[in-house]
Length: 268
Ligand SMILES: [Zn+2]
Ligand SMILES: [Zn+2]
Image 1 (tube, helix red, strand yellow):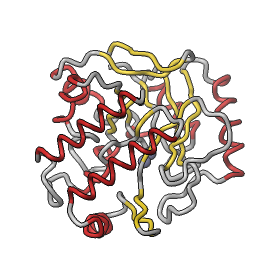
Image 2: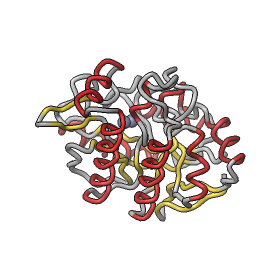
Image 3: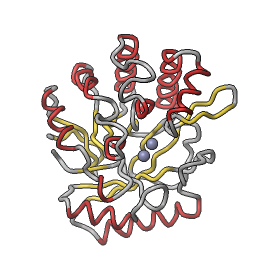
């Protein structure tokens, strides 16, 4: 598979390694390109350190300097924006739009902190179905109102639902909602990420979204990209071989990649 990853975190937010370490490792792995996508400051994440305003200037300048220092790989400046506060300063080459929280009655509830907090959020919504409906309504409204290129970890709530303790992801209502979302996001010209981050961290054996959704990607002609949401040099290409196999099993032979001329469809 074409080796590239546009979803990486470094010591500028909650990653373990510096941008330079990530870039050097990507070169060792023969990556064609790498994008660093720190968490932009949203102001209410109590677990994840964010890229603060002062660091943001250094971050952009540093990545620009690495573009010159490492001509053997294409380097892109990115940010991962949170849906509740996606504002940022500085010019990026691309942005990932992600939902990590839902706001209900002026309270902010995290989706990916732990199982208990997610369960609390689902209970506040009433049922798993009403939670899922709200979650995807937020994604669509975010996609309609905010400039970003890639939808991050589409079904993040499944971080704690690998064995379906919360609800069955294979239920028709769930698959229908996901398919409608993919259709709408594709119409909005968003690229949907196949994200191996939770696999690399040991939470899941399948990516976001799981392999059963790959058929929908094909049927709905979705624009997709493969990212590792890597927080260390050890997971930059985590699960990529398996993803390639599953994509081909679903007759998908092209994915999107970022180039100097923007996003283009590329053979796997
Ligand atoms: Zn994220
Ligand atoms: Zn991320």
